[in-house]
Picture 1 (tube, rainbow, N blue to C red):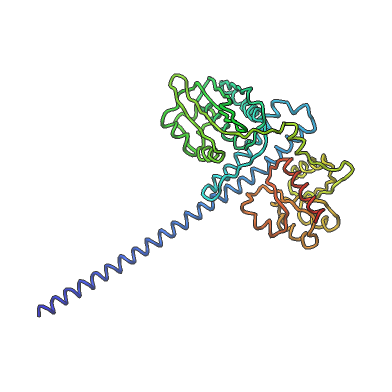
Picture 2 (cartoon, rainbow, N blue to C red):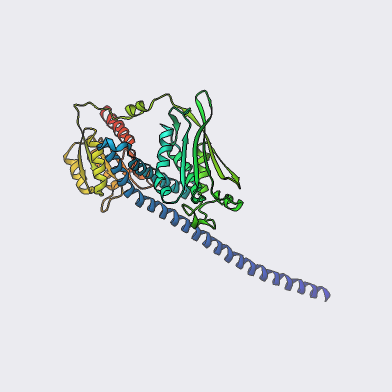
Amino acid sequence: MIQYIIVGILSALILFLWFKYQIVKKRFKEKCNELELLLNTSEKQLQFQQDFVSILSQELRTPLYGIMGLTNLLADEYPKLREDRKLKSLKFSGDYLLTLINNILQVNFINKEKINTENTIFNLENVTQNLVQSFSYATENSGNILHFNFDLNINYNVNGDPAILSQILMNLVSNALRFTKNGNVYFSVDLIKKKGNTATISFKITHDGYEVSKEDQKSIYQEFINVENEKKGYLGTGINSKIVNRLAKAVNAEIIIQNNSHVGSEYTFVIDFEISQIKEKQIHQSSAFEINSDSKFKALIVDDNKLNLLVADKILSKEQFDCTTIDNGFDAIDLARENIYDVILMDINMPKLNGIGTTKRIREFDLKTPIIALTAVDVTQLNRQIIQAGLNDYILKPYNKTHLLEMIHKHIENSVLS
């Protein structure tokens, strides 16, 4: 009898535990489903944010391309303006804004993409002087004075990435101005050492504004922060360190911050540059688009933006191109069928029929003519489509004139040889 009672109790206990297990299992499954739904929602929100930034950057690139293009055309058509301080500041600010847009995109895909650096020959003094000049309006209206000193021992060109250098220095100088009110900011470029073909350069920014607190100093290394007294400062936000630190790391450089309660703060950016043996005149000569003076290439430029057509037309016309411009894909197809062109420049983002679709239709009857995509869209999203459409290459708006001409030259030569 006792055995039956014990068996009954155990059976009831097992049944009770089984029911409890089923309840817990059900709740666990519900929680898993909730977490999975939350994860999917978060991923969708992240993707939405990334898509939004990409679209926004595209919208910013289009007018920026027009501004930078017209600035360069003014300098080309009126040589006396090339040394004008205001035009130089406008050009530098446009270049800086482009770099900023590019870096926002890089941070947008920070876990997927690595920062790609360039290695070009440039004049360090010109880059830093243009940077200082770009702050002229801001300092004139803030009560601050920006002092600049360039070490005369740095009398050579260097190999490196001037865009990344400008981005870092722009952040450091603007941060110093933000923490200074009716004071002084000192920006100096000095040669630390020169060994063989390598020069170690220091970019030092010192200001006599109020001391940066430990909390604010820490915030300098955080992304998109605001400090308590931001409204009293120059820009209103601290350095976006996720960008700055990644940029410094990308070029194997270091940023050092030092505080002195009696003087202010000091930011030092130290980097090694490879010294170039090529003089500045040789740079311009080697980058020129060399063609026979008696020849005349034909180019078809397709873009729905009239200003973009004007800029591209002016650039190529000065290089002895006979240009035809059209603002839509359908007419571009008819022109390509009826005429022979040496190169076609194709805008990607056009209404009704975009550059991808236009190129596909042109490739149905013309497999030889080089077609180069001009796009403001993040190219990481377009690589496969560009290849499948039959485009030979792409260049991102706003583009560098020399880069565009070199690309056109390369593809025309390849087309002739094939």
